[in-house]
Amino acid sequence: MARVLPRVAALLLAVVLAASVTEWTLRIVARRAPSEPVRTLPAGDLETRAQTVDVAPIARLFGATTAAAPSDIRALGVVAERGSRKSVVVLDVNGKPRTYRAGDEVAPGVLVHEVRSDGVVLSRSGQLQELRVPVKR
Image 1: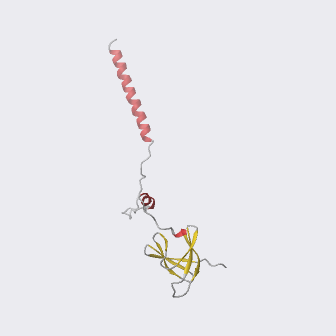
Image 2: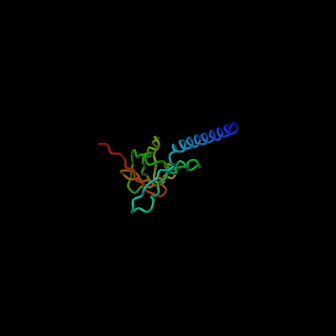
Image 3: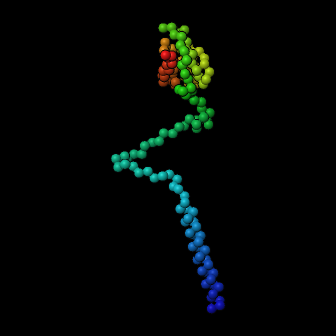
């Protein structure tokens, strides 16, 4: 019996150690949050909707330049002569007011398409955008 007691004690300590390690492992693993929460879809909605992602910051990392944002360009004033290319618009681009004529480049990818008596039409990569001169009352 003297020889059996150390072996039984060693086996008992090994079982206690294994149980302790298992308990701590389960506690640590249980604290982790899932990487993406599970979403339930309504019964009629079989397709997941695509999420829009803003790729502009990634494009800038690769050296792409973006045109000035619409909020960065403001029309300050116009000197327009009907049917003439002599019309001039004063635009504030990023805090710097300058004069432009039809066909001038305001910012990369932004051209003055047309100068009107009440504002200007800009061409942003082929899409037209109208900016009006603020009217004082």
